[in-house]
Amino acid sequence: MTSLRPSIISYTFLLSFLCWTFICQKFGIQASLPILVVTGIQVAAGIIFLLPQSIRAIGMIMIAIGFGILISSITVTYHAHKPDATSIDSFADDRTVIITGWIADAPENRPTDARYTIAAEKIETICKKTKSEKAAPGCDGSPYAGTVHGRLLATGFAWPPLQYGDPVTVVGKLSQPGIIEGFDYGKYLSLRDIYATMNRASVRESKQEPVTRPSSWRMYRGLYAIRTWFETQVQNVFPEPQGALLLGLLTGAQSGLPEHLSNDFRTAGLSHIVAVSGYNVTIVLLILSGLLFWLPIRKRILPLALMLIAYGILTGGSPPVMRAVIMGILGLLAILLGRQTTPRLTVLWTAFAMVLIRPIAISDDVSFQLSFLAVIGLMELSPWLLKVFNIIPDTLGIRTSLAATIAALIMTLPLTIFVFRQLSLVAPFTNLLVAPLIPIAMLLGFIATAAGILWLPLGLALGYPAWAILELIILIAETGAKVPWAAVKF
Image (cartoon, rainbow, N blue to C red):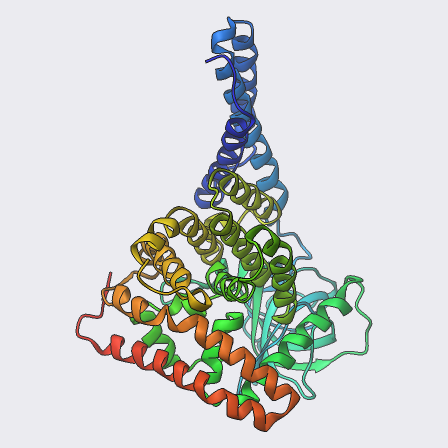
């Protein structure tokens, strides 16, 4: 053992970084502790380098492990949430407050209210007296007025509708998100850097210009506006719930699906097709690749990448969608180029970059974990499944889509069972039935929507075939969910 390939060093560094970050985030280990361990590894590696050439490779591996743990420790320490006297969660004790800030994410509009992610800048506590002249609950401390930082999730309603970047003032009781029916809502919101909630809030536009609003807010506002416009165009052509299902297939949006239908998709093992992950983006790429069949494989890469970027912009450019875009590109490259070693390393470097920015994602973001597992399935299992399904025609990427669906299902199944405590026994059958329909529904649905933008009657006419396929997918999900023992809950 006299030398190591650079790829071995890269694998060692990346895996040690990812594994140690997961351990620190999952089990709450103080990331500063490994410094002594890293120092010991570096010293040991240095000693090994003084030994004969035949075992110096061990020193290189130990150095790679040491640097992986060191970078992980620095990353976790830097990104750890450190509440202080002016952080938003310091005031989240059910006090009534007035908060001024700006809308830091696309609002989630619902039939009766809306959810706003607000970057707080100023806060004023209100301590009203009750009829018995006693302080109201949460008003035992002194009133406070001053600056504050952090994000909160406010549920209320504003008219006219507010958009990303708008200055806003909200009034209501500020609380800390807790555990709801066994679900850690606080940890879920922390993935979006949200550490406080305000239900039934009074929301109105503010005239105070935000101080912390980034200079790029107009660009993101435009991206969100494009997504909203596209969703409106889909809803103009397709009725519900078919329109909501098509939006789920194209953009991963799930808010429009009725609750009973979402439960049916979950029970039938089909919820992954309407989740923001690498799966639906990969299907988009497969359809586009099928349309570019007349180009050599290597010449398809650039136009596919450009069209995928355009797709990400069309869907609003949100971080989950853009992550799925990256993972979709990696999965497709692995399939098209027929190479495994380089894509594997590329996937790890992509995970490294994402975890470097948000280390909590590797331990608590299920969407992040499912995305990578799905791509691993695409790389490792799809080539074998393509041979199994070789009797199926690959028109519009149907055979490739089926192989990708089954590969993603197999790889994500263990995590899905662990997280959702449910095993769908009908999932293999429903996925075999639905997988060939997905690329056709997405393509026909997009064509009908595009035609509807030009002339609505034309879009409605072209939408009937897509509507029929979407209705068939819904029927398969509903039928699968009604099968006795369709899913086993743990």
